[in-house]
Image 1 (cartoon, helix red, strand yellow):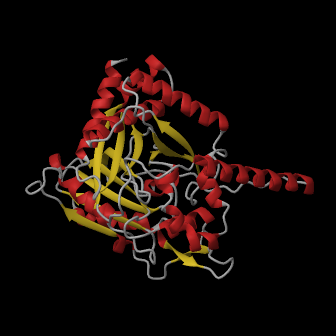
Image 2 (image 1 turned 45 degrees about the vertical axis):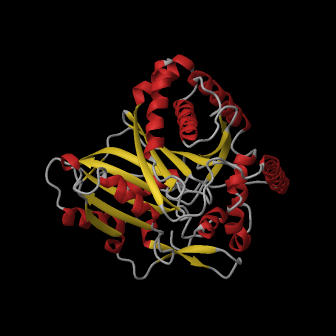
Image 3 (image 1 turned 120 degrees about the vertical axis):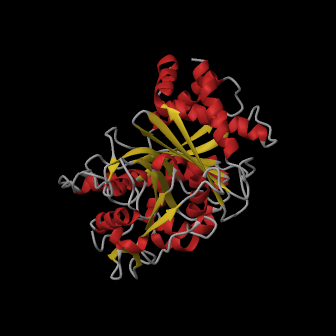
Length: 430
């Protein structure tokens, strides 16, 4: 993997990096050990496993040609232990020490001159539990790839070997058709972006701030499946309907009018092939979905979300303004170097927040024999966005990670409570 190039989309995420908009993904994962935890032994074990993962030994290196491009190169000074830290938390001064510490931790940008990851072991949690806090820069990989990287730190997880399919022979005519098809597709995405733009007057916009607040929400998967069985759709549709109701109540509590309003969510979609390299860079497109926060009936909210997502899936991930990541991947890296940060400020003109789903396997996972109990993912906040939401389903629960701009949302607990209340209303209606 040494010397492999960053895609144009990978470069775009590097260019979006700033002190107030760090572009790393995060995860807070809790474990239930069988006995006392030895932090020194556990961090040493994590360092040994991390050192075996090529992706974690590499840093991004600028290239002269093509202009603005970059490639991955082995860091000659790499020491895995330098990226791993231990903190002992206490509930003496904080009612929820993990959330308080994680909020400070997620706000700290990664050093882009080094391998783009960081791992913190947090001990001192109730009932002897411990947590791992993992940061991965979005230039390194997307959500699906992030799991593949993190899984290499866990017990006994075997990842599929990277496969590079051999392209079938193609005639010149076929190649020309492909080029023209891609050009037409790209032009269609660009045209859709222009049509989708609107004045950046979102009630969930926020001033630039380096401060962050994190919230954890855990929902029973059985209840969401009961809603799906009663009203149709997918579990993801149900989650989007729950979040729509939560955002409605949150807006009202913040003094905003909700009736007759929608909030537009960018929902990233993986276009990573099943046989592709799971440890590769970003392979993303996306959908735009207008969340019906103006609708008070929870069942009707679900119907609206179902119709919107059905239309998105019928059109496919390579059409519409939600395919912005595909367009970014087709822009020369030099243009990202010159204008991506400025273009990133226009995010509120296209969408109000990001809601992403991180795929996890159903198999039981563990670390040093300790059972994985909860996993809360976190998506980077786009410039001038107040909140970003990430969702992971593991075993019998749906885990929702809320990341908020601390200047605009000093109390993320109100949004967390709104998610629980919205879930209860939808379940009761089913």
